[in-house]
Length: 89
Image (cartoon, rainbow, N blue to C red; front, side, top):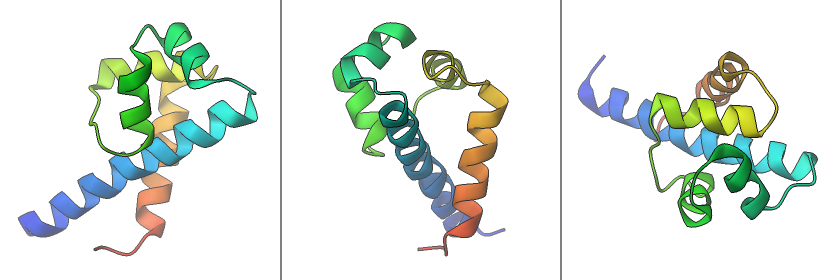
């Protein structure tokens, strides 16, 4: 796979992560501040993740999944499914 396609998939994965985190947080009736506290991260950083502007580490994604009361593997799977359903940029 060419680098441009890999980069595009990577970008889509992080965009999807932000969309999924936002949707799940809202479904749970949580504010960004509440999720940030539950996840042990800064609210401003969480906001950037939700906006697809930051690329968190695996460990941080695991903490966010815990804050969202879901399994890490399920969160990652949701991101993969989302990214695969979008056309490359």
